[in-house]
Image (cartoon, rainbow, N blue to C red; front, side, top):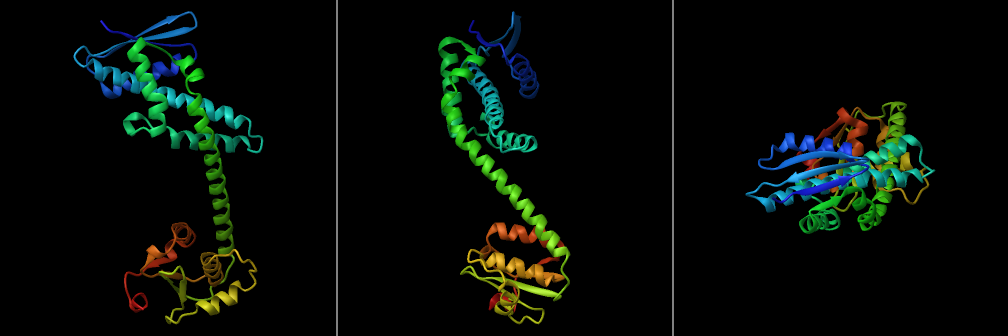
Length: 279
């Protein structure tokens, strides 16, 4: 009778918890786990389904691979972020959670190309050949390539986190600015153009783009300001009751559109076709 053995000194309790959860969730037929505890070492014996031994081996490799992937991500995140003295504790906790959530992809969910070749395939081959796997040794000595890749992933995660934090601060600043403005006009028509321009019309549907941008943005002496920056600043200064966004929303870049939705919420209306759209 074929039997596979998984050993661990450090990860016994979480591995046992995962087994209990997985057995309850999948209700596998003909596969059995047996637990044994030696001095400082936990052993887990896996007996495959006699009729579907190949599938059982795949199930075992998938199970162990998912567990090892998650533990590597946790250990790597804690170790890497410990050395980042520029981040406060709360930021490290949020980045760690963000990092694990975005990169822990179980094989059942589709598994990433990287983890498939550096985790699942080697684990499958080792179990197939030796019928034994040591989790601690595998994480310590067999995951170096994966950890090298994770360094770049973590740096990108930190960058994305900081960008998101800056964006939230920026939005809060705009909301504060907006609350301090007095209404200058009741309605502004916002009309995106295919060439990247954004036109602004008043409530009489008269174009006021050049006039308003000159009136409210001339003092903003920054060559790096985009048309979206100027339009946003102008809308805040005008503080209209309503902003009607005309058809051709696809011409707006997504970050700008999301900012409009957050900043103006119920003030934002959508037009699906009128004389301004057709022009």
